[in-house]
Length: 524
Image (cartoon, rainbow, N blue to C red; front, side, top):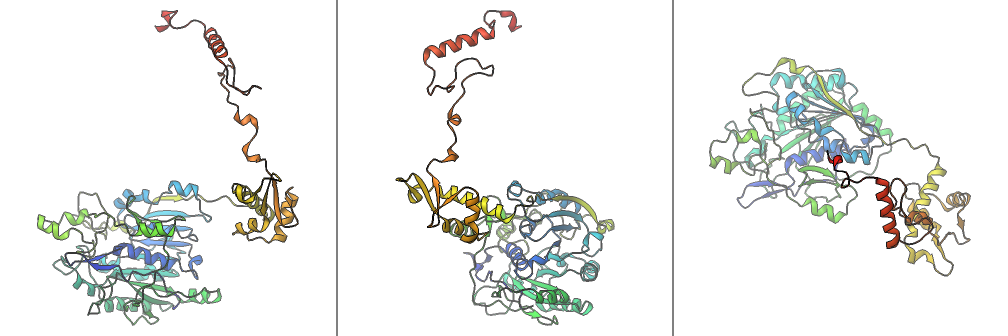
């Protein structure tokens, strides 16, 4: 369990605005997504995760990050609200970029209507279960069935559950009359209460261990120990840990946010280490797309600039419907959905009636049949074609590409006196970073392909660039489809003169026969 550590942290994300109200940058919901993703990305176990089930997926925002895991081959998005899933199922469809940069491993995505407490065949053989801010929305009878379904029936290698920390509520204004952050919360636990729930799971299923992490830090120099905005429990199956012991383990990283290992599940989460780390991140909030996105080979400075962009303020329709006065709206503006008077989450649910995250509506009870699982949508992502080339063929193709690329650096590698390119063979090999060939391996492959290599290991290429093409590539045919009239080319390296153009026009008119002007009947 000690290996479950992260270098990514949000220790400096909490601050006060001009009105002395607490804010988070990035917002807490984004911190939840990123911390869960970073845990799944740990080098020593990420290749073991093939099937992931996310319960309470709602608008499927986390899926945008979840699908970036290269080893995952199946993702199930499960929620109790069929109407909401149908509205947002487009979120899991492959994007245009997914067809350009295809995955190396297959990925199948399924959207299911179902309950977190109900067992179903589709949940079998699950490696990871994710439940981000869901258990506090469950009624007591549903919550009671969660451990049996997740740890008894599914038995994943790893299960992650996050829930609000009630001790942090003293930092928020605008709480509900019952002291909760959201009107659909059935409870909000302290760290000790959350640890008690986890302990009960460990007692019922002793083949699991648990470790805690905090999400959303307290303000700096706060006198009281209030913990984090949300608390995250990471359950790991013991036999899976034993399997990992056999594998080669990479160098351990520093912890992200305060977490305490609880191999008996008795210790509540502790505050994070005071020394923040600043690792490189390729995930940021895109203000135009209004999404958390993954940067693709961008410059580090550009990434840092984008990460500092603040998204515009958004509103929850559900919460606005409960506001009765302009003053209440002013107090609500800028607040986070689950964290009052904190940064607002940009989720928008365009429904006429208030929808609770547990699947309940204000005007009707929960339909018992909604616990039955129903497949609403499934899609397979495009995959790269298998590469059946031998290593020699791969080396030759890559070497030829690098040679053509280096030829564009004419001033450096072109010898005007000998009218040839002289490209160091070592440089060609160094550019082939994925194949990492040696000179002894690469030289005979290029020689067999009719490349000349000098005794000084220089690849000699004639000064005539075959990639430019022949003279035929520069001949432009000016004739019509019937091959009438002169053409530029056909042995003449010039444009037709005025007499030739007039003759061509006359020939074209005669070929057309009677014109519209000569025969008005054609207009009828």
